[in-house]
Image (cartoon, rainbow, N blue to C red):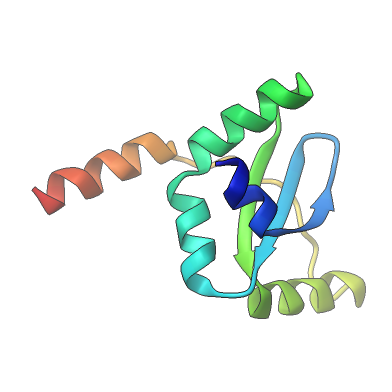
Length: 95
């Protein structure tokens, strides 16, 4: 998991969030598939509860442009379902 974090580029850090970007959608998806374990690792290292996210570089440039030009207001919104529930449904579907 540490290798996945190091492969990414840190783009934004707030009081309770961290955003990484990756050059390809594949690497972004790989990070997001392991997000629970990566989040646990970072929380253990920093002794703080962070919510993390990853986006590919193309999407990051769009987000950055919208944020910097105040075209869009960005606010943290908690997920309605947990990642564990989503992954469980995917695993059941794949069986």
